[in-house]
Image (cartoon, rainbow, N blue to C red; front, top):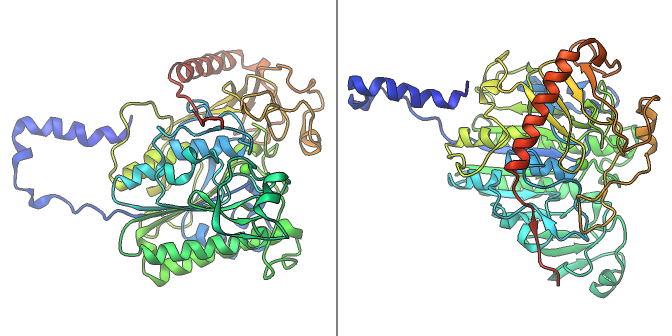
Length: 501
Ligand SMILES: [Ca+2]
């Protein structure tokens, strides 16, 4: 049952006895509103950091974060960037808010401005808010972070391997042009891997110096924490790394022994350490919930021990490393294996900050504070839907069972053929990485195959289809998936669409 109903029930039961009118002396003090730091890495896989099994790179700050906090081992995102950010920001499956793929510089769509975001939830409770890093929920002005509840924004509007939008980019008067670029040249040629760095709604550097992004985001984050130390704050830090093209500052480049990926991972770890040091220095660490997670499975790195990588709805495409840290509240050195995911953060933040949840719309996420505050807490929700692209459910998990409704080996990075429509069919070509891990019996991509049933408790690497042995479970999960899918289609909300000009 939904725990948030309990206080209401309690009042309803005691009120007729007259106890509700008793002296308020015994009322417990409300805990202060916590600061929230949400560090969201791009394309970092489950097996890319020490706390989740990586032994190749040094991640001492994340190791410490995990040893002082709780690791979530069934924490879900989606296979690609924009879908995942839509889930995170709205508390809904991406299908419900019509963000079906990845936004490109040619897209005129974005997360609808009427969506109530994480930032708007906490802002209603007086929080200072900022977004520092990669946005990727629409780069046109009506969709930028400052239109979605963030007081300020510093970062890149979409992935770092994209281009500038030659028509709609708005350059600041004092924009720093690098590499011989001018506004005229920038608008004349959209060049891959040369993306704009923005502040607010304007481009302040072009092309962005990607080597120093992690460092500059971190400095910006520390300034924000210092400036808002006296009031509750929400720092959303969606790093550009470790999405390709990989980059690292001079202090980290070539130092990890694990190539640029290792360097970038170690610089992200350093960034986490800087933030934790600052919180401790300001004596804010016990008043701050820090969450570290990623937006999809590994691209260049490792999603081990799971099968599949970015773009896949095998666990390796969507199950993310996740650490929650809040000394005195989240028990140290613990693990939660219950199903949770980035859709749960909005209702969870609402609970923690005392914000009312919107009542005019359906949310998919649930308040998971019970998981965070108690080791071995029972499940909050037992079901997870997996979307590959578009708004069709590709798989469903309930408890230990996972049923694929369609071919689980789609292309690695679903991309629209027509950039104006992110719902367009993905490329038919299979990338090498996905092919290497694909089931050799799989038909050509796009063909409907299934249902396939896996038992994640006995077969976490999803190697053995047991659908034929358990027709009753197949039927039950199929019905459940249909029910969810129909409900979401019925209550789906539109994406935002900017005017063409
Ligand atoms: Ca990503």
